[in-house]
Length: 414
Image (cartoon, rainbow, N blue to C red):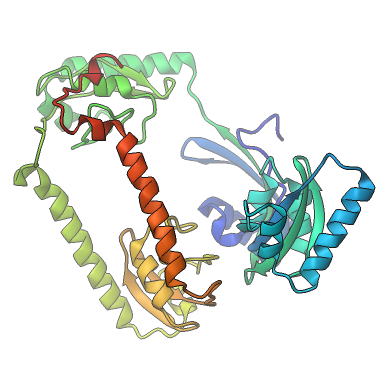
């Protein structure tokens, strides 16, 4: 499989909610051992095999420290036995870790899924199996390809449906003849439509996609979603409004791009006309979200399952969320959840919540506080962080440029 797939095999069970929609559909309708495919999705063929299914925790929270390697087996055994005795005797793992590392680490390794551990070059499958089978608050020694560790599992998420899938995945790529035909077709289209209005009017009928109102800056390295498109940006900043470019190959030939300059924005505050479409979209989305939340709340549902059925979806588990969580697993950045979840009561429906990207209904299953708030410690940490940020600002070229008028001619050179 490794020699015939664009993605590696992952020897791990994955939570149902973390599977792709295609993989979810496969496990919903097939028994263990079933092979299905090839299935074409967008530009990718997939062959699936369901290797196993179980109900188990999706993630575990780990405390761990690396152990010395350059000692003999007797010394190693004496050291690990003594460290385990210290922890089992009542000393918090964090205090033990700080002591043996001279304060460099408290041993908190955070949360991890089976797939994250199995695919990590530092840990691997054996490490993954050991920690997911381990008892809580019971320190043990485990070896991996990168060394030996003293590990303790402190928490496990609630059991969920998990599946082990083998997935052969192959990207469909065009032949050189096909690429030439596509190139020639686009070239003819551009030749026959040498104005921006004609491009917009005729692109869809000819089978081409136009991205409208794409804003780029002189130092931007690529257009969103198209790697290797710096040449298109560079071209735009050296041509006048209404000009249409030649064909540019981007992302190692995966995209053929034709660029047209629709307008330019002067340095400084933007005009109301230029920001009106952006503000209009934001307001429309906000009003739609508010109406969605109000209509759904009026249904009077009392369980998460009722909401999921009404929305034709399945509940998703998030292993940990605080006010300062920057990225929420499976969701991304969602400030509304950062505010609502920490303040929500446990085991009670919260929402519907109109978020930045989508709507949410939430049930907090557990709330925990690792440490009591210490005002003096928090103030000291904030002062250290602010000092470091100030150092970064002082070292930044932008700070040095504040009092000097510098013209950015970067587009001429790269």
